Length: 537
Image 1: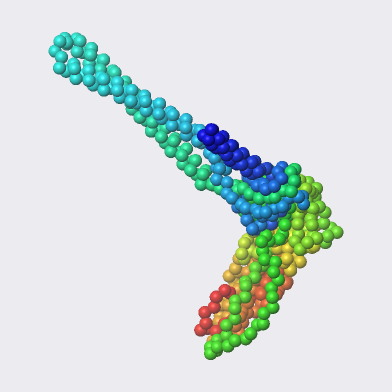
Image 2 (image 1 turned 135 degrees about the vertical axis):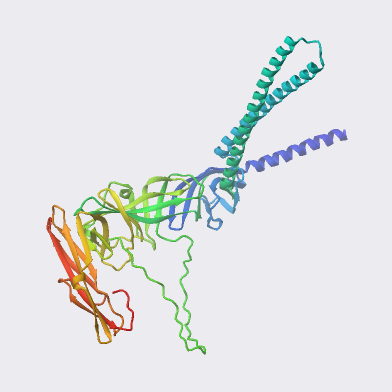
């Protein structure tokens, strides 16, 4: 009786344990989530997800899978839209099983299994051929010791052995070659699997959310987190279809993400802010003057400045927005401390190294066109475009690709914060306008005056317009500038150029009629002490 009671107690205890673990397992609730919207910053992204979960009354563990393994743990925020659910903790863990579910790995592992089976069968064939060869070798040994065969029989047997041994050796050789080929394929597949494993290792993670629910039911939740494996850079397209047409300026975002998440048909916003940058305002500290025994003064190096071209346009009332691209579906939010571009159409951005380009805004602006020639540096004549700075558009600095007549003609860099009012762009070289610059040796000389040497140089610039229409052209050259009092530079002739003495610039604004040819001559002198060597004249 006691044994029966003990057995019943053990069975009851066993079922209690099973029931306990079953209840525990049921309370680990795996639930999917989907991306509701993503805000991409210049140096990261903030991802928002939504979902629904059915909770039991009491303690529950919510498991949310297929998240980026590169999310920042400290940025995780989770909330349930109910006062009946208490969030106790949120923890992140890597999903080491995600690799096993990888379709590429599964495909190559199936291929590896098939190759191994082919190798196994081929090795069996090889063993059969070797056994057959051994059998023939044994028969040859028997024949060598036998004296009962006549000559004709021996000849037939020799032919028989010759043909069969040749066939068997060929089969062995081909089978060994086939095994070698299969082993090479096997090695390649194994290397590919290893490469994929190294690439996608810990490609996703999971969140474990421990909650206490005051009642059972289905609840909506929201999850957000940040990652630094995404971002965007501003860039521009500047297009001019033909001379005297308005410019079309397209403000674009170069967007990338390497989160290993699937961003498919998601709502995007682009922010000009910096993710995770400290927002603490600097505090005041007294600046003290110190001294030492050295008489040398030390001053810190000032940062070098760079002159860069900037994006521009006419005044706001002259700017027209185009409605032929995704820029038409972008709204700009200036309400906060950052500019935010909300894109109303969904986008899919794969997790890869190659970025995608999203058009944010599009503007048309009036421009002026002329030609530019600086034959001392480059004898070609350049078609130039000039337009005013774009105002109150809160654009960021970025690279620009320039197009003229449908072709890419170069690149530039636009800085909307430049103080330059008029922006100059070089569109193309025009070979139908010919320029030539040469030294006029007959008008150039070198003489000695007392202790000084005086050098005179004369240059002639020739311009010829072979176009069938008139053009306006800016011609540029220069006179050397002296930085020493004992070196004197004088302009003798400048052909009515606008001369800037401080930098030595000679500038002509020229109107060239069709097939017209003009010449500009300028002459200058340099006087310097005989004992000095000078350069750059």
